[in-house]
Length: 211
Image (cartoon, rainbow, N blue to C red; front, side, top):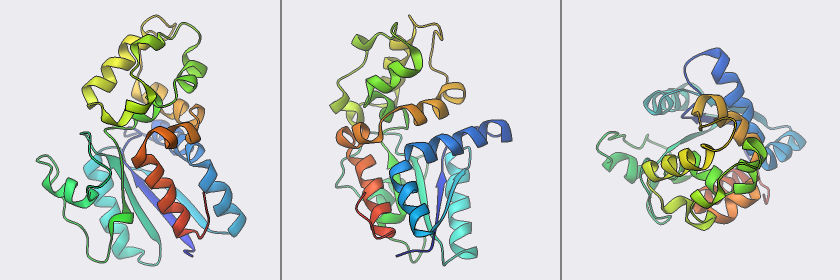
């Protein structure tokens, strides 16, 4: 069992005013893990890094400076990807990334939101409705079971159409993302998103618990 966990995650913007709420929202989404971590006295940190390259660089730096910590990289895959694919190989082969797997790490240290964080929101329409209200156009959303099979453009397009009739008029990542993380049900998301389930399972194994 590890004594300390740090998750370096893509997202949150680039100011203290936006990074702090995103940190809180991600920890709220990961509450089933956080509850056990606190019970066991394990140190827990979510570190939003803004851009994806910044997240990778911060993760690599942390591996060198804090080798005793269970450091995890959490980024968008940017593309639909089968659960059988190695995340490190995906990020190495992806044209805009080309990231190498740091020495001493395995696939559990690399986790992905497929194709992006917003897929988690599509996996729980009830959570979206909690945030946007009854005017949410749920018919514009793909089936929850298909959340990870859609491209990033398709996901954003679905959210755009679904939120247009609401008072908010649109989905804005910085404004809405952190709040939605705290409102969607992780159990629903895990049920429909294999990569999200993989994240919870990996963290559970690291802390010696069934999550």
